[in-house]
Image (cartoon, rainbow, N blue to C red; front, side):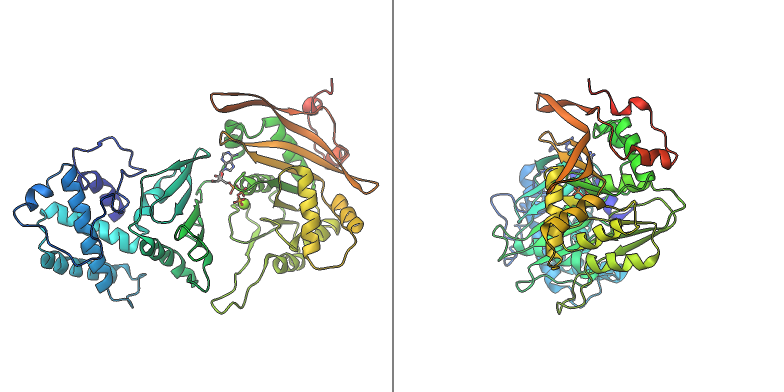
Length: 484
Ligand SMILES: Nc1ncnc2c1ncn2[C@@H]1O[C@H](COP(=O)(O)OP(=O)(O)OP(=O)(O)O)[C@@H](O)[C@H]1O
Ligand SMILES: [Mg+2]
């Protein structure tokens, strides 16, 4: 059995056998995340060994004993971390474990801890997890039902489950404790975080996306945000089950991808844009050469012929950054059949639009926007950010001829994600880009906090349907509904 599993099993017993036997393993009970609950223990201070006479009962199992186990653990752990050779290579797990075990034995003896053999083993395991793993975050990272983990300083950790935020009772000892975990996350990728560079993006070994921002920029202590990476990405069936879109909408979207329309997925933060882009990409036929360009590789395409490019942040000296834009330009020289750009945020939008307009049909990307029309104005702004002095009218024409479709996704108040609009970009009328919804979500009610409504076609056939015919795609005639 793995160390982590054994810790998981040992935990409830270690924290007090009689307490909360049914607490789900995913969210540890208060304090399991290693932080002192009030009153705070004397972590870090000169340890005072518990009086020998009181010790056996203090570690025996009920609430007071639980406090003492934690207290003692903090003392030992702090000493152990301080005494651990700072030059130790953390990737050499065997050697680190050996050292931890050796130090633990010595410190526990010096502290005069009155622990049973089983408690000693458990304490060593928890401390090892703290040192080699991500400490209090470990149980949250193992819980596959969570999609996001948010550490707002040492005393507040939120998670997102089923699209809803929940406060956990996981806590850290103090700011330094959170900082140590951040350092551990970023160490393997050679980044650093300190006062002079207080923000960092990183990824966990499993691909989860991590952002950390620390004081003085954060006023609540070091903040970590982890977007958990799902080993098995959502499928069309999953999204239909979640009520994100209907089978007809996906049938239509599949036809759009196969007919090589240029598509932007728009939506707010965490609305499911990347997930939708992944699904749209899954409709790309197997015999095409796909080049993906991302800030942090999140897309998981199942096709064989895929080249994944990932932008590079600058190094410790602030040099060597390769932004998305350069990768998009480079991808054009790689004979792509499709270019899929994870997200357009800036000047890369211009290169993307130019690619779409110059024979790279069927390209796709996402962008942050509140409505499909907002997506178009954001694209205008992004093109301006490319630094070319283009007149607005020219930019609009470029956008309207490049983009065929906008798939707009929303995270609704009840936590569900919905495609609220599938919108055709039809062209220019005067100075305005004309758009037409093909499918929309119409909210009707809110029952018990759950949003009710209908995903439906607007009854209007998009102009580009002939392209389906040309591509040999035949959609059922009633898929667009009836306008009446
Ligand atoms: N249709 C959906 N229904 C329920 N959950 C979803 C859906 N789509 C995505 N999610 C979940 O929502 C979270 C955010 O998804 P995703 O990364 O695709 O969003 P995003 O809009 O790309 O976010 P960001 O703005 O941070 O790039 C993920 O945890 C994902 O598993
Ligand atoms: Mg995304």
